Image 1 (cartoon, rainbow, N blue to C red):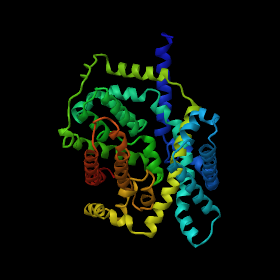
Image 2: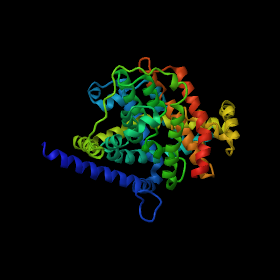
Image 3: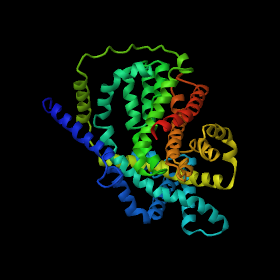
Image 4: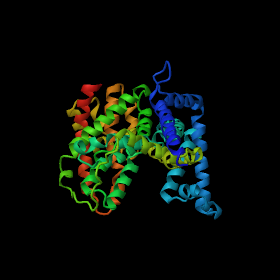
Length: 435
């Protein structure tokens, strides 16, 4: 085993990571889509005429299973981890699942004045759901090739020397930045917070990692952009988002409240290794690849869990969000100050765009309701990056507050406000240079 480890691990790292990078980066001949997007779009086109039936069947099964578990509590079902996690749910989740079923039944079979208003609002969301189910399924089956077979470990070693002087955090923080890039910002924040509680990082270092240096994962950005704009612009959008996030981070780590946070940590950092950097990077990546085994079953279970929590919530809130946008002025009034701020930087239709500030506090997909109808690709890219910036840190509040004495709600709100204020002028600046 000892002799076979280096070659097997190294081969798995290069082959599987190379395959993942190829699927995400290489374009299909004669198309603007990457290989992965070609597979996703091909599947979506094949099944697009069945989206309503697919969504209806999915929500119907969820509700039947949920009601059986909720009211009959079959003991044997409780022994299955998947069912226990996804169907022994709180009343609020049951409510969202039932309402989503009612909305879909209405869209399929209901016809009256009030139902027509409801159906007009839900149609767009339900059509979107079919594509999302296919997108999440295929993307999450492919993503482990990038996240699980050593690429994170390779980049962590190769780039750590640049982290300390630029972002004012230890080189080891690179692992959390890479984790957010490939797996998700939530996971990166959780891991960093856990290390803080062990005394490996100071409060200042942990908060910088969690709120100034994490970025949206490739899969999150890919899903978000697929709901908003032309897929051929995805890499331009993600590159713009990447630059915007780290531009904000470069400023935030040098100003209050970060500069005034506690810098004490219980455990000193380890001295830098003198081992050759490239060799160390490949060895660490090979070790990770050797220990990892791709499991189609586990990935499908993971996809199912994501969809079970995500889809009913999106149908219900998405439908009511569109109703509110179309038939009331509540969002426009509440977001008016933000609209003035966008107008200051000459955004087109700033008071419509300002409503995304509130919509992205509900869910990832809500701002897409507005942004996908913009005619300017430049504005789509800018606002998609700005809204994802805000959403990422709204979602992190509960995670960061769960760690003992790491931060306060007041501190997080100040940081979020700073990100909102900085993101707009920086987006305009980078758009002028890059777009």
